[in-house]
Each structure stands twice: as C-alpha cells, then as structure tokens.
Length: 248
Image (cartoon, rainbow, N blue to C red; front, side, top):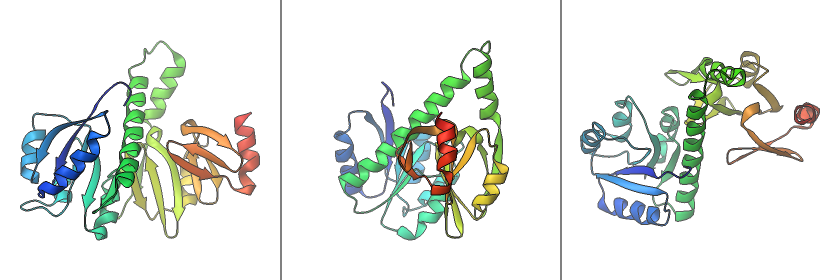
C-alpha cells in the first residue's frame, strides 16, 4: 500500500509452510509479519485484539478447518489460501478469498498473488479516502452516493450484497459469471445479460460479449484491449465504437 506496510499473519499447522512463506515475504519490504498461528484457535485469539491486512490461510488444520474459521470472522482481511487441496477452490472464491495457491507454489506465483492483494488494498484505501472527503464538494458527494448503491449477487448458497463502486468488472465463463471486486471475486450462475440490464449504464458498460466493466475502474485503453487493476480485458469488435465514444 502507499507508504504503508501490509501487516500479515500465517495460519498453518505445518512449520515448514511458515518458513517458506516467511522467506518469500522477506524479499518484499512492504510486507510486515505480525503473527504465526499454527491452528485456527490461535489465530482467533490473536485477531480478538489485533488487526491485520492480509492472512495466508491453510485449509486442512486440526480442530477447526480454514474455511470454517474464515466464516466466523466478522471483519475479514484479504485472504490468500495456501493448500494442497484444489477441490476447495470454488468455495474459496465464494468466500471472496483474494487468491488460491496450491502447494508447492513458486515464488513467481506467490508474488502474483501478493501483487493482486496489494492492488485491492490500495483500491480500498482510495475508496476510504473518497468517503472521508469534505461534503461541500458536489462531485465528491456524487461519488459517495455511488458507493452507497448496492446490489445482491446470488452465489451458490449465499446472496452477497455488493457496493457498485466495489465492482471492477464481470466476466462470463460458460454457465457462470465471475464478478471481480476490489476485495475479492464472486462466482454466480446469473447471466451477463442480467447484469447488463441491472447495472446502471452511467457506471458500467459492456465491452465484449463476455465482459462488462466499471467505467471508473479503467486505467488505460489501447487497440483491442483495456486495463483494469492488473487485468487485461479484450474489446469486442462490435463494441469498439462505444469505447471510442467513451474516451473522447
């Protein structure tokens, strides 16, 4: 984050996993280790009196499994799952984890997950700064009112209430849509056409048969693609005129 350390903890019952993550993090000066927990109960005790920005969370732990522990948290930090079990990936993304690393993972893959987390934490910081802006500025008031607009998105078993200003883009993939937010990703059976009809056109636009993007999250536009956070979004041929009009 900008001029601020990312405070993180490691929750894993295997000491070697702690050593690997700590070694990887030592190469990243903006990460500050604040706690080692070797089961979920230790983590709960630490979080009762401390706050963090990021946790590296194992799933298969004694007494209380990783996702069961995550569901108990009222205030959730950014979460990077570190596990040997790929079959729980869908549940992880439904719980809005930032990334899902399969053991053993390389430093390059680890760095990609951390960079994604950093981007989302910076997005949260910018949104917080908007909310704190003086209310004598009409433009800022309009931004605040947009942040308060929310929709419900139906996951597998849960309806997620999501602020429109939190949505970066939506991707259609087979029978699912992935809703990418500044604090995670939601997987839903809702169709992209439903999102196109529901989302306000003043804030969102469809740029491809498989993508809807938030206008204020676009960082750059180039031939055939645009950039949002660390993602590259293709621009469909039939939508190029709409993009050209948008960037005038």
